[in-house]
Length: 477
Image (cartoon, rainbow, N blue to C red; front, side):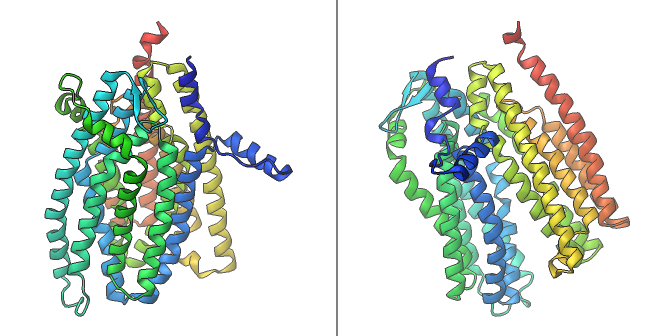
């Protein structure tokens, strides 16, 4: 293996460095090294932990400075804005994977530009232009569709929203969100080209600054405009960072024109994109389905408990998946080089670390909730019962394996999990609807558990083993 590949696999700029000043520092460094925590993982975890802690503080600010009507509109803003997943259609992940495959033949220069195989560089430039065009249409469509849809939704509750100014904040919020969507393919391309740690560091800082500005806007009693401040901060900071740090890279690619080395969207990108889009939408619908079902059939109290418990489980899963997600561009590079032995070594090492954090975190979370119930803390009444929460956390840990397997297979620019995602989504949805209607939360989670165990983990593992065996045959022979 060449020296450059070794540098990609163990980049010195990505290493998490702790000054060795004493025994505690050495133990910390040894422990983090054993867990495989590099800069990319560290800043991803920092972002996750900040979101968890800041989310709780934001709840307090919203309750303190917004009226009950404004509070309802504020959280509805976020729910409706999440519809942008239907406009993005999984292209971010596809862009990252395609860029990582081309990075196998390229390298970064000290000037911040790409050097190496001219054909690969031309394909990166073509990829970025195609993605920019797609996201320009997606951003425009988001404004044209989501703005009026949101206004119609809020208009249905006009009598309850008397005195609440929501039209201008909502329109402004969607416009800023569309702007963030417009520049997102650049970040995906940079991650695919190996700048995972650099992007993760920026996103951590971006999240902290944007949240602090949100709090200041709420304290200043700006009302729903505070949501716009948060989204505007994300857009402006993202644009400024790209202009200040990635300008040479972007200008170099914009000057590059080649009609014979470009990427064909219809032949190369779309066959993968539509499959990933269906998988993502299926997963999105599953995560958004439990609360409405419980709200309708079991009341808002149980729906609130499920919502908060799902938020905790989702945060834990997101933190654990940092070990896999930060390696996704590297997986693509190794697949492009057909270095399957190294791919498997890195993947399975990251997988057991991911599962270790998931299991330890789930146990700690469950014990914490059990303790809250034991001492009679009011927060325990806002969550599911310990037995229900345990079932949800077990499902989340199983989901880590399925998500990791999907990331591994998608690094081959294939999506064999599409049918699985649709079937899993349909079965989970029908099970949740029936169980939630007739029996309640425990039965709903039991149905989700068996669906994940059989259709998710069982079927998914069979697909993973079969595809891994078939796709890696050339090197083994």
